[in-house]
Length: 309
Figure 1: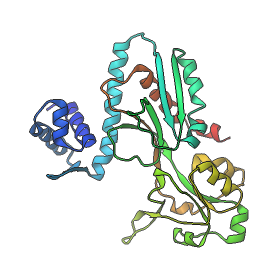
Figure 2: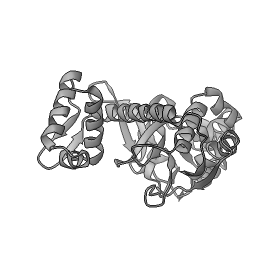
Figure 3: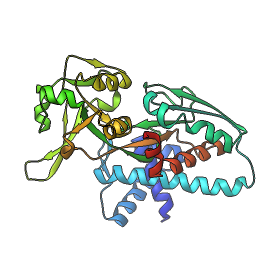
């Protein structure tokens, strides 16, 4: 059986959440899709999907494998399209959306540089902390930070997103320093009042019941919260509390001594910074080139260092 067809069938079933829906989209019987999945799991020696009469869910291994498969299939399609495009130049209008804070720092500076490389591409950049409906609002691509909700969108991981708890030296001098995440309820914590990436709270890695480290989610509180991350950043710098922020937001202030990291020994594994786009058979050349450009820029450690300076 064709290995590529197995991977394509796995992605289709995982994204649609149904054997029947995936089979209908391809025009084959559900039993054929089931046999492909069985063959794939047998070849890999691991369970990827939990199938019941009502629903299909991904296992832990299946979730990780899905991301790799989506990336491989996109790269294969890009390679084939590049050969077919030959010397054709990218053109048309590219619509991109990104979170406001991250977009200002790490997407907006790249847009003019991309246009210089591809002058026949015009670009609209939308900065919003609202989760935009890419298909409904006709966006080609979104840059998203944090855990991604299940959806029919295709995602490519561009970089790690690490988070740290920080406060000013003066705040810690006056109120003390938390030694364990369980200490946080005793401190004023600055939290986002509306943010999809923090619905489960702040994440920490702690010792589990059998000694293995596990991720603990806490929802600390305090007298101040805000829906805007930049306001929380300013409040933290003013000494009003402890904030849980991405490294790209606070690294410059940490280096300058304006903020002090706390609870670093309990830092959870990083989540991701992703490019997300609607699933389609052939991406326009301008979108493929934008994705390649983002991956190349974010893969350079000096990019993050230069932007923090």
